[in-house]
Image (cartoon, rainbow, N blue to C red; front, side, top):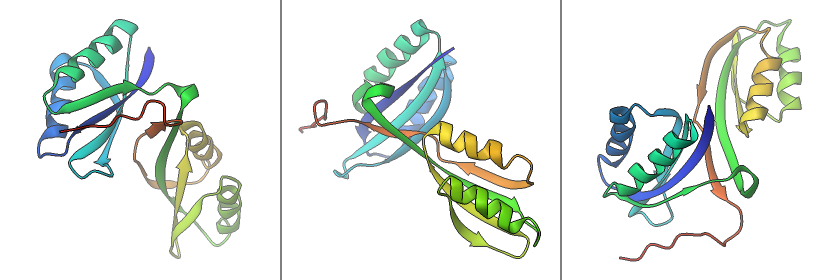
Length: 167
């Protein structure tokens, strides 16, 4: 199974995300993660989709998404020419005895404690997927109460392939 990161620029209108995800659903394509947000120009949204499948499926995804009326641009973000990040919030059960050791592990990964309670802590970690996976592996012995991940988002490096939309 291969994975590709697709970056879309789409009209910032109601239902656009539903139409894009509906295409995936109708065709039986798998979405690993999807993130969306408004760009510097409020008329457009940047949508990052990580999809998996064989090479033929991934090519079909690109062609089918490109045909959607709301989609203005689609490109594949290549790992060596892009910057990828995601955000993860992890709520961990703590005791007075375990608090310092979990903080020490979090500090190694440059996590930020965003909530501290008598019996739990919430840590924020940002970075590439492997950094987040490594942190989760290191805290595997602790009781993870809740976990939320945003999914991958990214931009291509440099200004060589910036898409300018004109209306």
